[in-house]
Structures are given as structure tokens and as C-alpha cells.
Image (cartoon, rainbow, N blue to C red; front, side, top):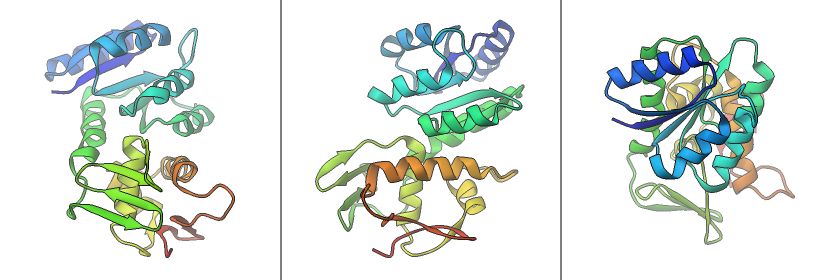
Length: 226
């Protein structure tokens, strides 16, 4: 089972989530501050981070940004109801998903599995595909632009793989939530829009209009035409 690093300052949530995941076979290491969580990263080497947004000291968004400076490990934010602005900021900082507290362990585990499954299901077509200046290696799960490797978070990579698998096909935000995030029971377009913005900053020409991830106003997004 995946190793999970839980960074949560509320002791009742930390103990409850940690105990629930351990009972399901996860190896869990917990920290009550962002600084302590960052210190655990190199030794524990988690496969996913559960990160509370409202932490004492450096907050969850700052922790997310620091992790993204050196790692593309999947990150799920734990948020309180009403933290809409913070959710958007956290997604822009590089988080892959979020869970509103309180949440049952079954829900948290399902979201952990969904995020991790994105990397184990890269798509049916193997090999390297070339789209303009982009080289997309579906088997190796890497993307390069003009020969330079582009570091993508798991949700960014899965979104790019999904859109580029069907060039010029328009996908609604709800379809992308279902295919990429596996959110079939509710829709939150912020996940899609934030991920698209992050992806564009990494693969698009900043001086021009988006070439790869194009907005189809009123419908959603498509890859190309180039």
C-alpha cells in the first residue's frame, strides 16, 4: 500500500485519518507543522502527501510550493468548508486534488487511489508522440519541449495525456473531471481550470495564445489544432 505523509495540525484529524489509513494497510507518517512535514520527506519518501491548508507557521500553500520546487509527488489538500479562495490558491500552487473536511476514511482512500491510478494508466498508445515542439512519451510518462524535459505534476501529466490522445476533440470540464480526476459524483471546474493554467505556463509560448491546450468557449478544452 502507498506510503502517505499526513501534514495536519489538528490532533483529532491527524490521529483519525492516520489510524483509518493504517487500518487499511497504508504506511503513514504524520507531522503537525509544515516545517516538520518537509523535514520528513527525504527520509520517509512518501508516495503521496495529504496536506492541510491551514497550518501554523508556513501554511499549506507554502508547503505545496516548496515540495513542487524539487518533487512532482502527488499532493491532496485537506480543506475546511468555505475555504474556496484557499482551494484555488492551493491548486494553482501545484496540488493535484482536494478533500473537504471532515471526510470519511473511505473517501480519503478512494481519492488517494484515484490520484495514484492516474500515473499507472497512462493510456493505450505506447511510445513517443510528437506534437509541434512537444514530445510526449506515454510509456515513460515524460514530456519534453524542444528537447528539454518538462516537469509536470501528476494531474498536469494525466490531463495532457488525455487531451493529446484525441487531438482537436473538445472535452467539457465535467468530462475531464471524470476522466482525469475520476470525480463522477460532483463537479468542480476549478480543479480543471487551475490545472490547465499551470500546464499552459509550462508548455505554451508565454508571448502567444495557447497553442496546445485551447479553450472552446462555452464547451471546454481541446488539444490543438496546431
